[in-house]
Image (tube, rainbow, N blue to C red; front, side):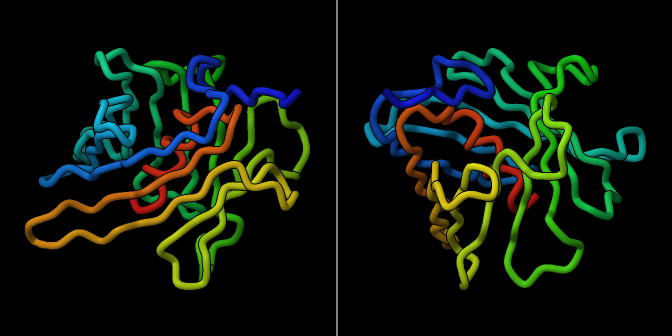
Length: 186
């Protein structure tokens, strides 16, 4: 029996491979619509504009009905490009879900480490690694070779939007994987 890996909510863990399409909306900000292969909206991602008053980047993950699930926050001038994820719209440390950091300051290919709040070691719980050309990524459990999601970017044109085609493996929280994806290029 496979163990369910729920980070945001167990209802986002499914028994079979979950194929997602994440479409970046045109316009300002980093707003996305997440659908399944039948074009049913599953999640929505909205970002706030960075201003002098709010010198942090904020991204919010909502369910299909607009209920806030997750708040991602990053200081505008973060040297290590770290993100903190909180439940709902919270910024409180007791609502922390994960911290995402670049594995090193200088990288030829993106490599991100994800730490869950109960982790007291320097070994990450999940890792996101770009492939050689940087248009696709794999998500691994910690330092293992166990892949839990695969992400492929489809570059948009003037008439079409940028898309991510995502395969989330069984029993993995697909809302968590979406949260990782929206930090890749923001």
